[in-house]
Image 1 (cartoon, helix red, strand yellow):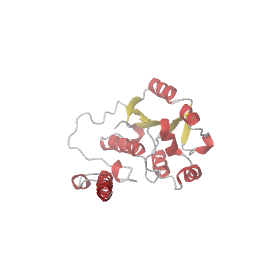
Image 2: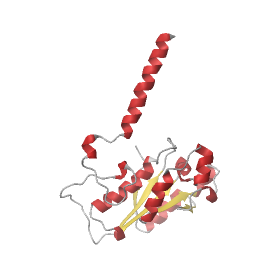
Image 3: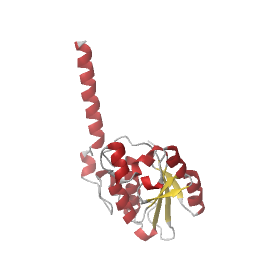
Image 4: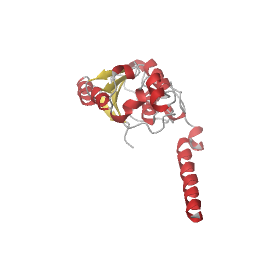
Length: 193
């Protein structure tokens, strides 16, 4: 029994150190990373690249439809997928695209609907404030539009009044992506591992 306890204790400390290490930014990145516009979290930064190819083209409107899905794993932190929305915006700015040429539509579906709960609903569910609201407000401030799948909302028994007003309700993620595609948005999945 004592041996099992020691093994479990070692396993706990090893797994804890791995999780902590995943949230820390390596030193070789800390020295290089910049934040062209959005800077509310360390992981929304970008590494500048000298003389990149495929840089800003003034004849293009940069319209991106981001696919956001997943589930809330850490209710006390901004969801990594939402951080990717900010990073996508910063990457375009770093690539020379002026703000007025960037249009980002982020479509939320699946279990990620829990990340966009209002402060009150999030507090009820997770007994803590919603850390994602800071990110959503900052992204709204630079023009990012958020949409949520009505089918996912129904599946999770959520009503529109349960979520932040920063996110608009669509019939489904599928219909949202088809509509955005017809409007010239390029699909980008930022949720896959």
